[in-house]
Length: 139
Ligand code: BOM
Image (cartoon, rainbow, N blue to C red; front, side, top):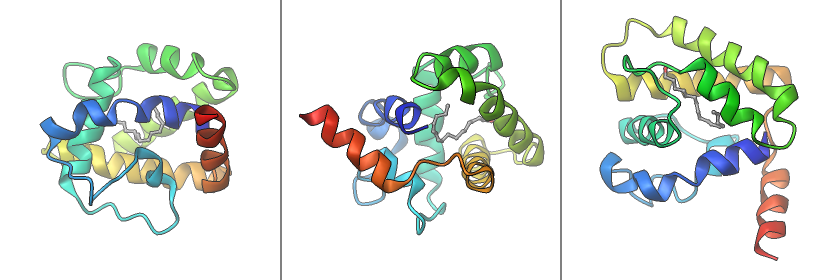
């Protein structure tokens, strides 16, 4: 999951401007997994929408594109094991917030729900794992 997160997070720089997400709101994407992270900024939902679009993970109704998302996740280490459950969790979260008409807010709620589902199943990456991976990449 740390690898998928860091891979997905690479689109943040690309999406900052169009989503109006300033650096004081989110410095790096992996902060998403912090225990005290707040899902309060609509701009973060817009950023996640832009990032998903960057990797072609959305349908034309701004919902998760299952096949593309499956392929994206499987392109990372451990993705083969994670993909099915991640896609199913995101889909269940989408169903829960389907009536929210604003795409940025809806995607933010879906992301929050997805994070909670990952924590419940014990597949959320820890900050230690993410930090270690970043240090390895920099070395
Ligand atoms: O209905 C819109 C679907 C938007 C999906 C939101 C999922 C939350 C993504 C935030 C965390 C990402 C970590 C890894 C990448 C998963 C593809």
